[in-house]
Structures are given as structure tokens and as C-alpha cells.
Length: 262
Image (tube, helix red, strand yellow):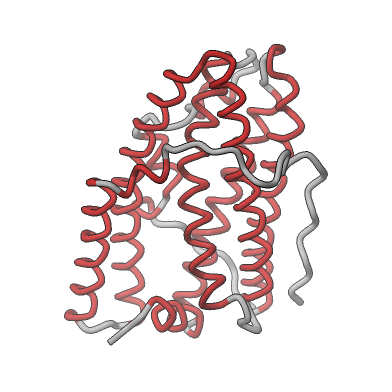
């Protein structure tokens, strides 16, 4: 019988699967860094107080991308191309979730609705990221090669999620509650589909790299589909609730630097 720990251990122990894992993670984090940087630059005057926090969010994402690249370099590996079907951020954009990159490449300021769209998208995707990092920290937080990176990124993702809760609640109290809930629900329902599809795609690539038996691959695919079924019925609700975080203003300070992994 296999477990999440044993599966991730297989991925970490094999250079090719580890290379793909770190490349996918680095690419997604770098994309998030660019998006947040552009959003901060285009913030409307009515919400300029958010710009430093969005900048901090983007700097954290950039840092995470550099961490995964450093993990690759430490093992003497170079990034590999991310398969299109495993590109989580691109697939979300194609579904119209979050702010379109075409809009972010322009110089005109965003609207308050655009910022709500961004924060709702972040609330949902940061929930996913935080959940994944909690799982990895539980199983690999003390791993000699990746444990330090996992612990740092997990802490950042918790801060990002708390920031989304805090700012969305602030905007809800300003009269945007219905718009926020509509955006959250639309984003969550789309995200669980994309996450299922990306999980199946990554599993398929790992299966071929690691030469998993067909029965093992089929069992993993069934597990991914079962999780999607649960999320479609009820699990998506954890992504749309809002509560004031215990730690206020979690992105109020400067970003921390990436640690050395040499």
C-alpha cells in the first residue's frame, strides 16, 4: 500500500521526477510573482493602501520560485519545460479565473471590481497552496534536502491566505459582499476542475518517469477523481468562507529573503 509520504519520497529520490516537480512549482510561483507585481503597479487610487501588500505577496512568490530553482541547482539539475496540461496558472486563466494577462500587460489602472476578482482568485488558490504545504510539512518538514524550503514556503502561504481573508472582509464591510461571494463561488468551482485535471496530468507524467505499475497508476487516478467528487459536493465550501485571521496585517512588512541551499 502506498501513502502520500511514500509517493513524494519516490518523486524526491528520482532526479527526473524531482526535476519535473521543482520545475512545475518554480514556474507557477514565478508566474504568481509577475501577476502580483503588475497588480500592485496598476492598483486604483481608491485602493492604493493595498499596493505594498500586493507587492509583498509578489515578492514572496518570486522567492518561492528561486527556492525551487536553488533546490534543482543543489542536485546539479536544470529546470525542464512544464507540460501544458500541468500548467495550473495558465489553465485557470483560460477558464477566465483571475485577471487576464492581457489586462495586466496594459498601463491603465485596474478597477475596484478587478481587485476583488484578484483577491477572490487568490483566496481560493492560496487555500489550495496552504493545504498542500501543510501536508508536505507534516511528512517532509524535517527532510534534510527539502524540509527547510517546505517550512518557509508553508509559513508564507499561511500569511497569504490570512491576508486574503482580511482584505476581502474589509471590502465586504465596505459594501462588496455579494460581489465577493459570487467571485469566490465561481472561482472555487472552476479551480477544483483545474486542480483535478492538473493532478491527473502530473500523476501521468510521474507514472511514466517512475515506471509505476498500471494498477498503482489506476488507483492514484481513482483517488484524484474521488477527491474531486468530494470537493464538487462539499469540499469547495472551505475555499469560499471568510473569517478574520488571528494574525492581523500578515503582509504588512518586507518580504524575507530566500535561504541558501548550497
